[in-house]
Image 1 (cartoon, one colour):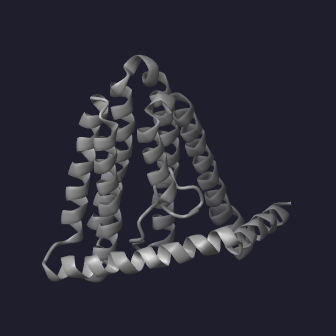
Image 2 (tube, helix red, strand yellow):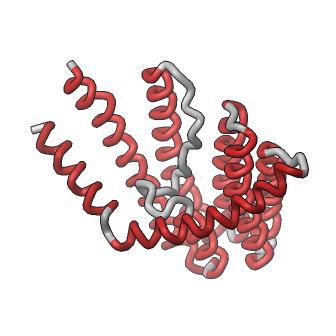
Length: 230
């Protein structure tokens, strides 16, 4: 029964990877990465490190909370997008100068704080209308991020070697288009702040789905694969 389930999951994954949506997404991402790498090489040449970019992007991103609280959504969106661009850029610079364990930790930690901060900013914008839905979204965010970090820790210990690949945002769904969903979610919230309630509920459910995917992945790799190896 377990083998049938694992084969079915593998079949679904292969079909998705070979789909036109996935291929087009990869093509767009490759073109984007080429442009980002050009900027990253220039920054590295001028002694700007990945950690500097990470911290700068975090400070810029946290400033969006103030604009959200004042219902200045366009200004908040600009700062959010700058933060997301810095998140892409610091990874590109890190690959040039050499990825470090602390760099991965700093990037992941500040990203999670930033995501939660944006949700908090929308709660401040209209506490009466947004507080409960923001709490639900933070609930889902906590579930997915906890599952992600727990899986990363167990996977790290079981492999007995450092894995310096950056963990994904809790808003990412199975790697689809990578960070594209995260940017779309925040853009949508800033464009339609009046629809925060339904969007927050949808994103919260999305986060719970991500947590379920992580748990399923952990079960497959840590239980089924281990049984196969025995």
